Length: 326
Length: 267
Image (cartoon, rainbow over all chains, first blue to last red; front, side, top):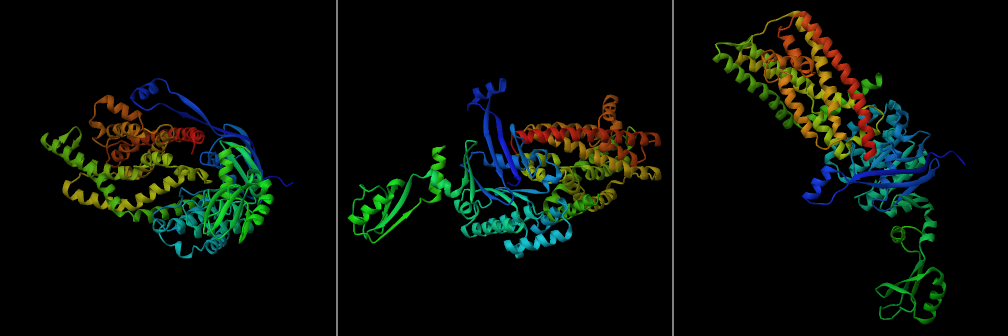
């Protein structure tokens, strides 16, 4: 096996948060002696990423995804555990390390608001000391892949959210980082723009062999880009493996869509009726009984059409988060 | 070094471009920088005339010269970093700065200097116009003018380093405003912005000589106006250098500690 680009071993991050009840009395009390609480945001996570992998990093809000990404990019110092990225200890923030990584935060902007993105790009060129020919090549690549052409000369504040995000991503990648951390890069964007960014990330990974770790609440992003997913919840690792295995592992059910022409029949004896519209029933049945139920449906009823599916990935993920552990 | 020069050039361009987008606020800032010394100038001129033409060693014309030069020196050396940092820490803008392979102070210096380059010509013009009304007494002392340049440069750097360090308290507390306020009050008295330091009683003058405030603002003004002997000028510049050394060590220590805190509590 090749040396991993990212290696985490029992990484922990505990936030010390001061807490108090609401109200004046409690406020005065908290002045006298402050109550603090230790909140483990990341509670012993280990995983490795091989060069060139694109991995989806999933978990509900507050699971510890952003905290992990911040530790990996050197913004946060872990409480315990070890980690290396490209052989560096991220939180030492060595310049040679910082030149090889990037962190894109979907809800934060690095571009200067009042001037065209092109000017911010030039500033980044100087900050990262990108040699002129490399910069030129990368800029033209990014302009082509993200269709930035007309956007670069407009003040950033006049761009739409999606346009701005494309420019943000370009600014973050001008120095051609080998490791890319993306925290919700498609948040708040419409479906078309999400797809555009997805395609771009795929292409960036393919062209430059970069290793990408991304979080997203849009399962379409993850399905399209990541063969492997890492799921965390309450700061702990729940799952690390192929997306298809996640579906297998976390779903005990399959969905049967059976078309009868109307919604009059009572199908409760076959399985859980999820819905019926336009004469099409959606049933949920235990995985093991799928074949048997299908057989019965076909034998008993005037079936026009029948379809057996895995539940949608959103539903699987919801189930994973709700269960907390397999 | 080449890389830094490129960085400064690009930061100049960026700041120029974004400041020109905010011409109105630039004008408002400048008005503030003109009004404050103007108020003191009017007050002291009035007092001086009532006292029969002078207060201490300052004639009415000396006051005019003092506050007009003060206005310019203050404009050259002031920073707004203390307002900026609280916002940076709170809104997470600092995270981007930390992700970059360069110390964030460089951007701040370049940003500050470029905005000064924009405002300075206007401030000079305003000073000339005000001079027509207030008739400053200007004595030309060639060696003092020559010494003024390094003195004002040192004053700028010292003030920048100290205020940058002070701004870093935003790492520890969200109540930066209170600290800033204390600093500004001390600055007002001890830097000679409100009145020439030589008019203060001895204890205040001693405090001003020991503390850094005088060396950030009033010293170059006194120097340019020919109010100092060559020995005083030389001692002053040496004091500035000592303070600058102290300030840069302080900055390094506080920055390191601050980043540690920032990366412990969440960026």
